Length: 213
Image 1 (cartoon, rainbow, N blue to C red):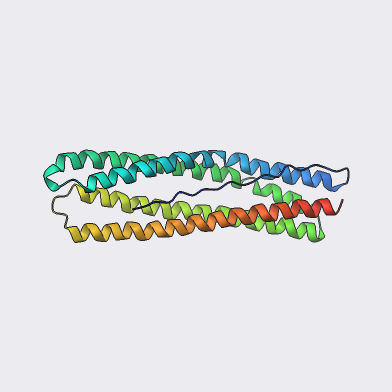
Image 2 (image 1 turned 180 degrees about the horizontal axis):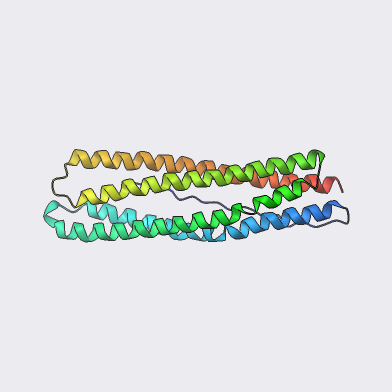
């Protein structure tokens, strides 16, 4: 039942501005990317808490699985604790969603910048905007899949307190959880790859602006 947290940092380049007309564009681009990075701070901070909650929940699940049906009272107590931890994880995910939505609003500023440039610089910033948009879409996909994972986990926890639950049914549900966890892991990888691409294109855009000074 190993789970995966999304981990990412949108790197922000500090730009030394020249005296050419492009310095204004550099400053606008730097400010816009910094706004996105700042807006995502809540999301980044939530990751540490989310990772810790997942670790605690996983350990508690293994402890619960070691109990027998004769210890049903203890099982129910631990399942309640598991569901509380799961609820806390969902709260963290909601915080991430809100943070990313705030960051997404800064994308409109890239359109303003694009209108002020042309040639290769325009193309590079357009590519950057597409990459940024794709990155945020991938985060939305991650959230959807993560919520599916928590729903399956909740169903699994509920099965633990049902005396009539057969071992085969429990194993099937664990299989569903593990399969969905792989989907989440894939979503995490895609998002982190998209973050690297955004940072690469961002750096390239700054280099292009500086080359034209």
